[in-house]
Length: 313
Image (tube, rainbow, N blue to C red; front, top):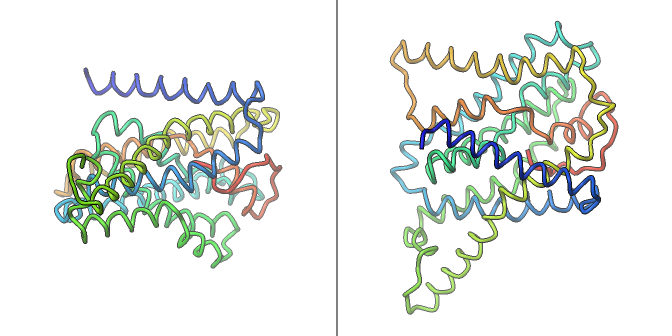
């Protein structure tokens, strides 16, 4: 099956799951409070479990030597989006909207939507790339992103939020465990050992793997439920919305392709999976959680939608 067909089928299946969440919200199977709770469950429980197990599966000294730059790519994609947002904001946004405009234009959905796509295309290597991208993306989000959103005012509290991020903690613990205890990388598949310690470790890792497998479907359902809770009267077509769409879906991926071509001209190339992951993340729409960040942190007040700052991206 061709890569394009795999991507189209995966996108179709993702939208069907998102539609299920939207229907559940409209049929009141999921309330605003339930959506918030599910969102927190994904961010604080299932996502860290998936990250930890994925680090055990894919991280070794060779992988770190070949993929050490991927967090920098995550930083770079977000910084590129923010820079382009700064450049086009005088054309598309009013003065009081500019911090939010730049933030929204720069913040792509960097993990939950691209994750199933790269998993289908590149397996565990693609998932590892997305999770490494997440490290850089979180750093930019909680530092420069929050700084821009608050009108250029430094916010040390946002850095403490970065240090407490469950996904980053799980990433660090997973990498350390895989490197310091190499035998842990086989625990998920261990079924015939006789040592109680190994069997206990295997049970824990397999349980974490099962919990982690809930991440993608639950995050898509939560995304649909969040979309189902939006008031469409607040999201009518406007010049500002057009600018966000142009910056996020057209300019950012286009400029990224130009930069990659320019780098190739001077002999700078990226591994195939890392490069394709860059393209996929850069082409993603605005993260659903943008509305939550702007509600809580923006200098310009926004209407509340009853959502938590821990919503999936």
